[in-house]
Image 1 (cartoon, rainbow, N blue to C red):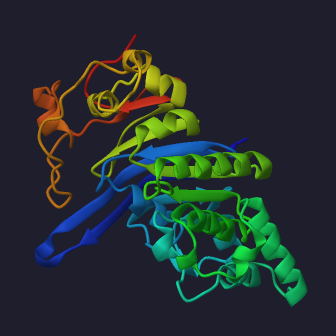
Image 2: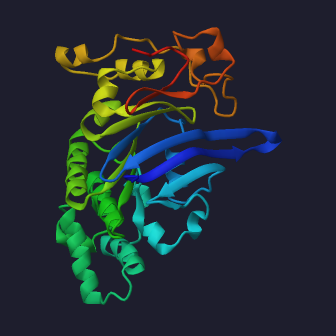
Length: 322
């Protein structure tokens, strides 16, 4: 029996440009997310992380590939998906300042998904549900009458989390949910997300560029580069034994405070070159222009994903057999 709540097979999303050019934002990505699990999807800006999120929730139509959610193929249809399909999968965006309507009170923002996904809810019951949502994210009940501008960044993001919970989802996509927040506020939001996951048996697709955050949050980690998957593994294995040269480069650049943390990192690998344009992805391995281990085959032949150990997959021409 398949215990994956979400399965993505060879997902592609291309954006055509003038002159026959094409941006291959997502180029053949396959992922699995088990029920109750947190998958960290990590990559630099422009790697295709958010594009995957927008395809999953139906904002973009996939160019190719399959999206299987709870055994049902939702690859096509986009925003025309059924109400149940839309309620099952929600998203929390990076910037709550732009994702919350500034002209709506918090009550009004929470009332909309409740009204859509809970039919025929009387006003008194609606107020109780709004109070319940605020209580779940540990915000004062009097926030219901306030506008987003009266709240801090962390409080606005918790409202966004409450809005996602209003649809009673099974899967929440977290698109850089703490990157715009101060470090102390980040910790509060992350702690609340973890608590909610345990209380409600939620599954998370956690999109971020912050690998250090994933050490304590994710069950598994997947690395993207120019729309392609480089490596994925259970979090402990990933941090103890990174294999792909790009992954090693990212991990070696994580800032640390103590010598103990420094000893856990790969040897310092200096980043060379810049990320190529997604309009002109290099042939062969997309990372070969910046890779210290490149071989002639890397310049011409695109590597295939291979399993090194159970759950640990790497897309590279190097030999990782033990």
